[in-house]
Length: 368
Image (cartoon, rainbow, N blue to C red; front, side, top):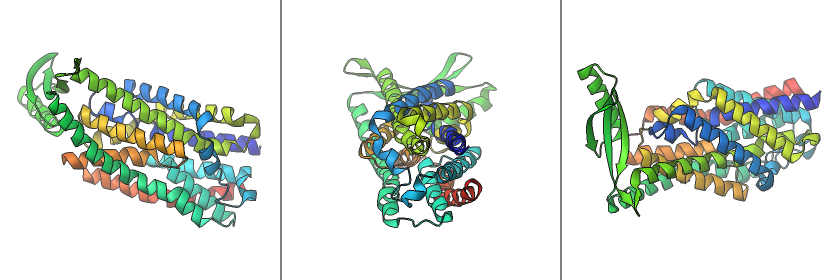
């Protein structure tokens, strides 16, 4: 019965993780108009699953980190009651955030649940490990992403101009081009759509393209392919980084083994993304900041470098914090960030860990 409990609660956590996190790597593809929702989600699902399966071979350190060993007593960490409470507390936290459309950190909810369940079990909490091993990477990574994205995008923009590649925004209605403008921001383009709809009583859409060639390759085509590649890298990195954190809980069911645990987690993550990702997708893609293709590529590229690097060194960074931090940086450098939404996201981040701890503690009362 205990094994069934740990299996159900951990797979529910993985489902919640997929619902809240799966679209984060491809949000810029959807938000910039590079592709539509279903294609972006499909790309995220495939690349995240590949990352999950790769985690079997490369992420032993994270599996050990999130087993709870070293944070709480070794005797408590290996009990199914504790593991189930951690999974249930973290899963409820992530599902609640997903329901209100807030992108939060599964990592933070897990850390909170580890501590809360440990406290309820009257176990000593290793505060030094909590600070150096968990809090420091989680706090530093979004600041790094913000800074790197703020620097990288202007450099990319200057390189584009040096190659003679320029952006053109075209407005369409009934399959025909109404007008085109060079250098128009996404925010200005959206405003122009409203004006054209009012003036002409038409359903107007717009498309941003880069015109010019780089090393003989069409600039727009090159950027779109790089954008898809960077989005795939983020999703792959997320699967690589997040799967071991949940597989660590399934290791309490020894019969599954490392491969069985990671495979089940990967499939549950994929299902959660396919069924329940839409609300968080809208927040990430549409509500943080308007973005063009170059800005989306910049955010994804920086995110993938940080998260893949963290997986290599066993640092429990949050893909959510890194990807959002990159978008915050883009919104700041362009002056188009929606700070009311950003403020709500930051508030959700601040409350994630204490809520995870509270729900982890309550869950331990149920599972013990």
